[in-house]
Structure formats: structure tokens, C-alpha cells
Length: 265
Image (tube, rainbow, N blue to C red; front, side, top):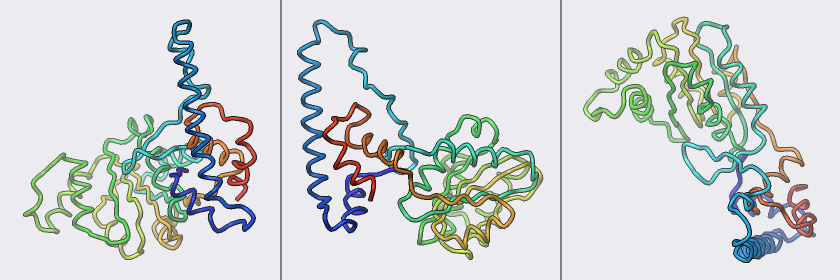
């Protein structure tokens, strides 16, 4: 799950009429600035008597990973990632299998898929890993080029026909154990078009789809895992908010009440 300041404001502004969340967010920003200023001043005052290691944050920073944005904070995906990884590396079926992550827009499907994609065991298990983003405006040629660039590196593909690109993708994957992430696919017809490119030999290859459309996942993953990504629980939501506002440092006690009101919503 990841949040930006704008996401927090837009997500919560319509909830409780008794709570002005814009005011709460401005208060949090003011708290954050004051807190960090106090922390810096304290560090400067004591720098002659302390080592740098004594100023390390109280909590371990959260890993930030994403193919699209470096401003995403990863929280609460450990168990979910393990479940998906276990399914992707299973010995059966040996034929090509599809796993899907489904959920509303902005809930963290791409972030979870990225965590799986960058897992060390996944990197070791598959001979080829490919990331292709589809999005709402489907462009078959663009997807083929993304796949080929991942397999073969940067190539001059501008003059190649679509049929030639399809042939190159199929040959490039044939006989190899591959993982292909197809991120943000919206339409059943798009999947039916894309699946023709991928060899179905018995190499335990896998495709990981992310979609906000449940019907697409059911159509593509008829025999595979469909993982529905839901909201975070209260504890994890609080952790995420604290990471976003205080960057992993300890939070002041007087920030708990307004913060918990945001978490509750």
C-alpha cells in the first residue's frame, strides 16, 4: 500500500463531516516540520559528544520500490507477497499458469507486483523476467516492444512489422522459464490478444496480471490464483501514516488523536 499527501487528502475529504481533514493534514505538516527542526537542532547541539550512529532513526526505514515512482512507501505486503511468490514458483502446473492481483485503482497492485518481481528467489528461479504495462489505452505494439527490450535489450524495432515482433517474442521465450508481469490490464479482449504471444511449453513459466477489473482476472486465471487486494487494517494504516509523516522517526504522543481519526476513516 502506498500514499502521497494528495492521495491522503483526496481519499479522506468526504468522510466525517465533523472532521476537517484538510486542517488535520495542515496540522500534520506543521507538526512534521517542527518535529524535524527540533530533531536537527538537537543533533547539532550534541554533535560533539555523540557519534553519527546514535542519530539513526528508531525504526528501520521501509523499502521503496516501484517501476514507475520512487515516492511509494511499502507497508503491509509481506505475507501477501509470500503467498504470490509461493504460487509462482510451485512445481505444478508445469504448463504456463496465470496469477492475478485485483483491486481498486491506487490500492497498491503495482507496488505488490513490483515487490514480487524484485524478490531474490524470483530472480533466481526464472530465466527471464519481463515487465509490460498495458494501461487503459491498449497498444499491442508497445507491449511487444516492452517485452522484447526486456528479453534482448535495446533494439531498433521501429521498422519491424507487428507479425515480426510477435514471432520474435515467441522465439525469445520458447524453452525458457519466464515470468511476465502484465500491469494494469483492463479488457478481456486485450488478454486474449496478448496470450497468443507466450509459449505454452512445460517450463513452469508464469504470468502475473494486475487489474482493477475482476472479470479480466477470472477470464485469464481460470485455474490460477486470483489475489484480491483489500484495505489495510488499522494497525498497518497507522504505521503507513507515521512513515509518511515522520519518515520512520518516533511520533509525538500528541499526534496520535488526529492521526487515528484519519486511520479510522
